[in-house]
Amino acid sequence: MRHLFSFFLATFFLFVGVLGLLLPVIPGFLFLVLAAGLYASIFPPVRNMLGRSHPRMRRFFRRLDHGRQLDFISHCKLAFWASVEAVSPRHKPTAR
Image (cartoon, rainbow, N blue to C red; front, side):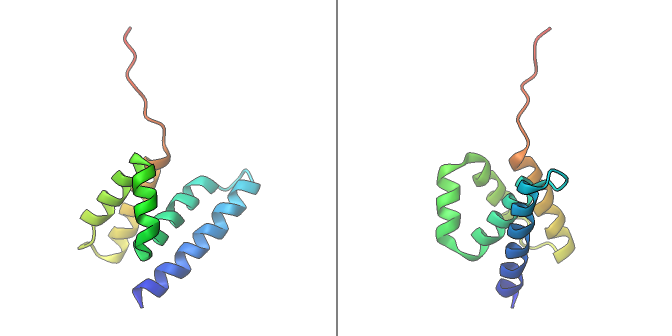
Protein backbone atom coordinates (compact mmCIF):
# COMPACT_ATOMS: atom_id res chain seq x y z
CA MET A 1 0.00 0.00 0.00
CA ARG A 2 2.86 2.38 0.85
CA HIS A 3 4.55 1.75 -2.52
CA LEU A 4 1.31 2.45 -4.33
CA PHE A 5 0.87 5.76 -2.48
CA SER A 6 4.51 6.66 -3.16
CA PHE A 7 4.08 5.83 -6.83
CA PHE A 8 1.02 8.08 -7.18
CA LEU A 9 2.69 10.86 -5.20
CA ALA A 10 5.82 10.60 -7.36
CA THR A 11 3.71 10.72 -10.51
CA PHE A 12 1.94 13.82 -9.17
CA PHE A 13 5.30 15.46 -8.38
CA LEU A 14 6.53 14.55 -11.86
CA PHE A 15 3.47 16.19 -13.41
CA VAL A 16 3.87 19.32 -11.26
CA GLY A 17 7.60 19.40 -12.03
CA VAL A 18 7.03 19.28 -15.78
CA LEU A 19 4.33 21.90 -15.40
CA GLY A 20 6.79 23.99 -13.37
CA LEU A 21 9.32 23.85 -16.18
CA LEU A 22 6.70 25.36 -18.48
CA LEU A 23 5.30 27.91 -16.00
CA PRO A 24 7.79 30.17 -14.23
CA VAL A 25 5.60 30.48 -11.11
CA ILE A 26 6.04 26.85 -9.95
CA PRO A 27 9.54 25.63 -8.92
CA GLY A 28 9.61 22.69 -11.33
CA PHE A 29 13.10 21.40 -10.66
CA LEU A 30 12.39 20.89 -6.96
CA PHE A 31 9.34 18.75 -7.75
CA LEU A 32 11.33 16.75 -10.30
CA VAL A 33 13.93 15.97 -7.63
CA LEU A 34 11.17 14.92 -5.22
CA ALA A 35 9.68 12.67 -7.92
CA ALA A 36 13.10 11.14 -8.65
CA GLY A 37 13.61 10.45 -4.94
CA LEU A 38 10.24 8.79 -4.59
CA TYR A 39 10.69 6.71 -7.76
CA ALA A 40 14.13 5.71 -6.48
CA SER A 41 12.63 4.55 -3.19
CA ILE A 42 10.28 2.26 -5.13
CA PHE A 43 12.56 1.06 -7.94
CA PRO A 44 16.12 0.04 -6.89
CA PRO A 45 17.58 0.33 -10.44
CA VAL A 46 16.55 4.01 -10.52
CA ARG A 47 18.18 4.54 -7.13
CA ASN A 48 21.42 2.87 -8.25
CA MET A 49 21.54 4.90 -11.46
CA LEU A 50 20.94 8.24 -9.70
CA GLY A 51 23.26 7.43 -6.79
CA ARG A 52 26.16 6.54 -9.07
CA SER A 53 25.86 9.55 -11.34
CA HIS A 54 25.12 12.37 -8.86
CA PRO A 55 26.90 12.80 -5.51
CA ARG A 56 24.15 15.09 -4.23
CA MET A 57 21.56 12.41 -4.91
CA ARG A 58 23.70 9.93 -2.95
CA ARG A 59 23.60 12.33 0.01
CA PHE A 60 19.84 12.78 -0.54
CA PHE A 61 19.27 9.01 -0.35
CA ARG A 62 21.44 8.69 2.78
CA ARG A 63 19.35 11.34 4.52
CA LEU A 64 16.13 9.57 3.55
CA ASP A 65 17.48 6.23 4.74
CA HIS A 66 18.28 7.71 8.16
CA GLY A 67 14.72 9.03 8.40
CA ARG A 68 12.93 5.72 7.77
CA GLN A 69 11.82 5.41 11.41
CA LEU A 70 10.13 8.83 11.41
CA ASP A 71 6.38 9.28 11.20
CA PHE A 72 4.89 10.17 7.81
CA ILE A 73 4.71 13.97 8.30
CA SER A 74 8.28 14.17 9.60
CA HIS A 75 9.48 11.97 6.75
CA CYS A 76 7.78 14.30 4.23
CA LYS A 77 9.48 17.30 5.84
CA LEU A 78 12.82 15.52 5.71
CA ALA A 79 12.30 14.65 2.04
CA PHE A 80 11.42 18.26 1.25
CA TRP A 81 14.48 19.74 2.96
CA ALA A 82 16.78 17.06 1.56
CA SER A 83 15.52 17.85 -1.95
CA VAL A 84 16.06 21.58 -1.35
CA GLU A 85 19.63 20.79 -0.33
CA ALA A 86 20.07 18.58 -3.40
CA VAL A 87 19.11 21.35 -5.83
CA SER A 88 20.59 24.38 -4.05
CA PRO A 89 24.03 25.54 -5.14
CA ARG A 90 26.95 25.17 -2.78
CA HIS A 91 28.45 28.50 -1.80
CA LYS A 92 32.11 28.63 -0.94
CA PRO A 93 33.11 31.35 1.48
CA THR A 94 35.08 34.10 -0.18
CA ALA A 95 38.15 35.58 1.44
CA ARG A 96 38.08 39.31 1.96
